[in-house]
Image 1 (tube, rainbow, N blue to C red):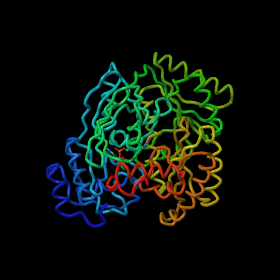
Image 2: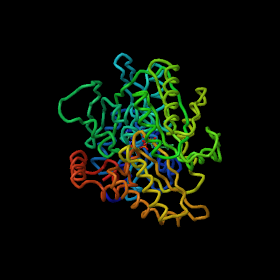
Image 3: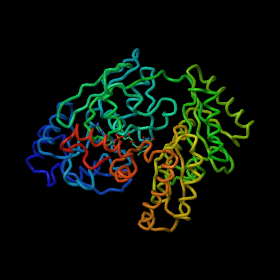
Image 4: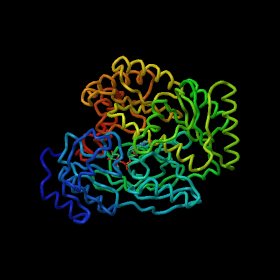
Length: 477
Ligand SMILES: Cc1cc2nc3c(=O)[nH]c(=O)nc-3n(C[C@H](O)[C@H](O)[C@H](O)COP(=O)(O)OP(=O)(O)OC[C@H]3O[C@@H](n4cnc5c(N)ncnc54)[C@H](O)[C@@H]3O)c2cc1C
């Protein structure tokens, strides 16, 4: 990658590819594309190009390759690790390639249970297209009204459906990708089985735009559940939550489609949300909650009966204290919305040191107990806001700044807190990034903590695909 500023000639050539109407050069127009969701980075770019076709993407990448210009692919820019904005190191010298105009749902093949889409299709429009064909596309995230499938693929997004349907990686059959050379890899397979060598699509899933630009994808669809029941459950401890998870899996099998652990402090964030405060779903004061969803391929009555059986048994075994079942679809949606908005509601408490960790599911209680002790030793006044996809062994283990503290003083502790939390994660055989990725935020952590052989293989793959280092420079590796 080149070190100096991008020449005006290169900028003009790139603008000519997409047309002036689809190129942004004014700082005020570019600002939303360099804004980082968490407000942790202040970076700039001289140009945003918004191609409308794969051929235009190829032409942009060919010019970038020839001129050694860094390119940052961008979807909905909802990522949480600074991956979809220019890097601090390359600020002002990287061009943003925004996929938002390439947003067509190309085809829904209901008999094959597949859908072909362009990378810029917004996730909730994909969910709707699947639903209109009486199918389910199960990827669901709090950012689904803005994030794009290309971004979901490139960050291997998780979300609330992973327990039953897996990560984005499990939902992709084929991809079309523009490689750093400008060539197109036409891997739009819709085969369920294909053992003809290396599984190339998996290299691009979760690559955070460092190996190429995803331009199209073939997605897996599923039958729509006929019934769905959602409940908030109060319990005494994460150990009880683990017991409930296993009970639900035993009794409901694949029907256990959602299982989120929520601490009292996290629930309080949504109850006290300054913009849209929510009602406490369960009377009384409890240290822990679980948001559990049970689905049925047969009927609503079947889902309800299964949920009630699980709750009755859990009460009899003293695993849970109380439960509230949503009585209407609107209430079900509110229950889920409270969970999805938890990060946003937490903002009212000020700055936050965030972790998106995973450990083996059975070790979640041990992780919480060890991490709480370690964090309290470092910042006794810190407010631990802990919630997450317990069914997947993934927690958003966040610490909000103590009341009355200045943000800059709080962030002075970030490195030490992260060291302590990541040490426990490593001890329990976990991962420092379960779903948000590495981006520019956790790059130095990855370099320090990832197995050296794995890192060396990743560097070789990057060098083989992108010898000039033009694709999303200074990210991941
Ligand atoms: C309220 C909220 C809730 C969230 N909940 C979850 C959650 O539950 N689970 C979860 O996993 N994440 C979650 N996220 C994080 C984020 O929404 C996801 O990572 C999402 O998948 C990012 O999609 P995007 O289109 O916004 O991608 P961007 O942020 O634009 O980009 C993300 C990465 O993908 C790359 N990229 C984007 N498009 C392409 C492309 N076409 N080709 C190649 N590379 C590309 C970018 O360069 C960057 O590295 C949440 C975020 C918010 C704000």
